[in-house]
Amino acid sequence: MSGADPDALDSRAGGSGGSAAMDQAIDLARWALGKAASVWLTPQVVGSAIAVVLALLVAVRLRFGPRAWTRPLRSPAVRTDAAYAVFYVGGFYAFVIAGPAYRLLSGLVERHAPQLQLHLLSHLPIYAQFFAASIIMDGVLYWTHRWMHRSPWLWAFHSVHHSQRELTALSNFRFHAGDVFVRGLAQFVPGLLLGVPAYVWLPSVWIQVALDCLAHSGLGWSYGPLGAVIVSPGFHRVHHSADPGHYNTNYGMTYSFWDRLFGTASARPEPPSRYGVPGLQVPESFTRQLAFPFLFIAGAVGSRDPREGEP
Image (cartoon, rainbow, N blue to C red; front, side, top):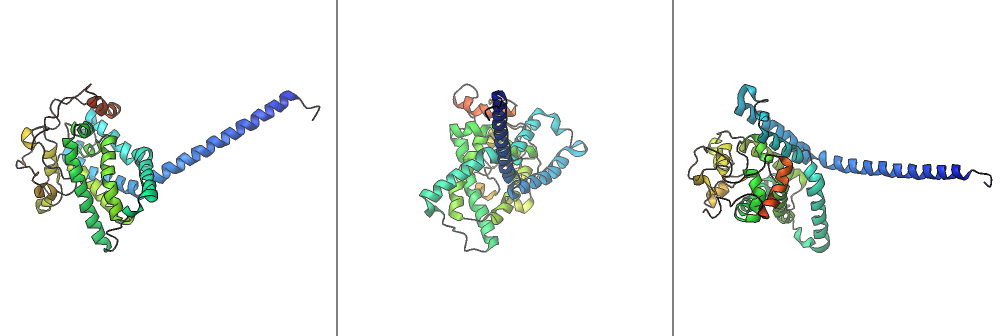
């Protein structure tokens, strides 16, 4: 060792350190990819993607006819909605926001409030759990939706969804991440109380995604007698109407009977003459729309919601 070249020793030491750093980087990449796969390849994401594709195939073809696959994508608004679809169905939101938040909240409940895990529906047959959970959770969403139209702060986020002036099946995905987070948070505690296993609620998620895509398609379908229970495209497009006579109506997400039960069903079910929110200037860009609610709250953009204060 006494005759060893000090420069050679330094070179070997540096090489060893570089190799260790490279191994750590590879391990980190493997961990990140594994986490991503665990989100993007879950039955919820895969099933939702399949439901979305099937709903889009039906809705887009019927709405736009023979030129179904070229006409909608010519619109900047529709391309923005497509970016939202990739953001949510692609699993990015689940990986970056929803997944970590759910694990954090679940851990807090496990440590500090395990009594919330009551499993209220566990004694019921599977089909009864499915329908009960679907109806209860949709009821939570109905009232959360109404709250979003009443609260100026929540409306700042929800207004992004209503900024669309051209309804297509992809409009279902134009929701700000803050909007989606609030809805998920509203469902968290009821979900704990009900304690429905994944194999029961997953089909409900897939059905809801497909129905929501159709509801935002702009089609005039009423679903006939079933429309008294399920939100149809003809029913939901009234909720997006810019006509004052349609304001604050048809809040139902999956089930339309909530609006009839609580008096918010539209008494004017005719097709809207236009969509959007008059006076609200939301930029037609996915990234700029992410910043829009914060500028709205700060008073830098936007205007008073014309629906505010309506019965």
